[in-house]
Amino acid sequence: MNVRPLFTMIAILAGSACAKAPPAPPLSPAKASPPTAPATVGATAPQPALGSIVGTIATNPWRAMKGGGVVYLEDGPQDTGVPLSATLDNHDMAFVPSIAVVAAGGSVIFTNTDPVTHNVFSPDGEKWDLGQIPQRGSVVKRFERPGVYSVLCNMHPGMLAYLVVSPSSHFARAAEDGSFVIKDVPPGTYHVTAWVPRLKPVTQAVTLGGAETDVRFALER
Image (cartoon, rainbow, N blue to C red; front, side):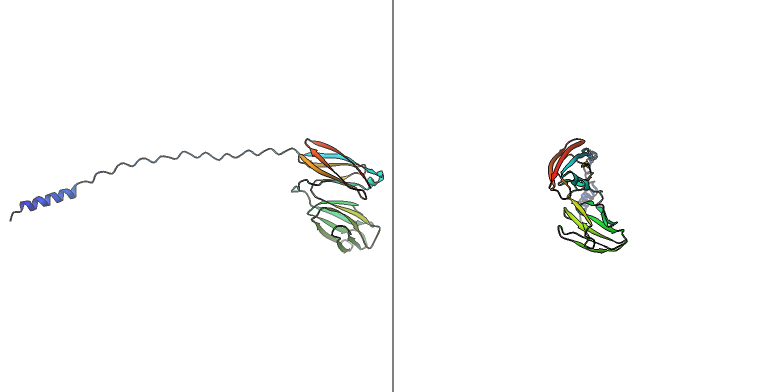
C-alpha cells in the first residue's frame, strides 16, 4: 500500500487548520460628541411701573358727596394677593361703614355689635335676605357679580347702607371733598366709573401712561 499520498493529504489538511485567520481591521476610534451648550435662560422682561389714577368727584347737589362715593376700574385686572373681603357691622342702630366695597368674587362679613337683634337684606340684584343676626353674631355672603346693593334691616327701617361690588380689584373710596386715589394700576387704558349714592354713575375712558393720571367726574341726579 502506498502511504505517501495519504501522508501528503494529512499534512495539507493540518496546515490549513493551523493557518491563522487574517487579523480583523482595526476599529475606528469613536468620535466624541461635542459638549452640549447649557440652555440659555431668557432674561425676565422688566415689569411695567405701576401708577395711580387720581381725581375728584363733583356732585349736584353738592351735599350728595357728604356720604362719600366709590371709584373703580370696570375692566381692570383682578390682582392676586388683594384681600377679597369686607365687613359691614350693625352698630348703634346703623350700618358701619355706610358704604362698603369688595371686589367681585369676594365675601362680606355682616356682624352685629348692638345689644339687639338685626336683620340684613337687599331688594337689589338677586334680592337676598340673610335673616336675623343676634348680638355678637355674624353672617358671611359671597358676591360673584359686580353691582351696587342697598343694605337694609327689616326690623329697623331707618337703617341703610350701600355695598359696591367692583368688577376689578382696583377701586377707591372717595373722601367727603370728592378726592380719590386708585393706586398700583398697570399702564393702559381703562373705563373708570364714579358712583355716589342716589346719583347717576359716570364712566370715563382713562389712559395711564406714567406715574399718575388725573381725572375729573361730575355726577348729578
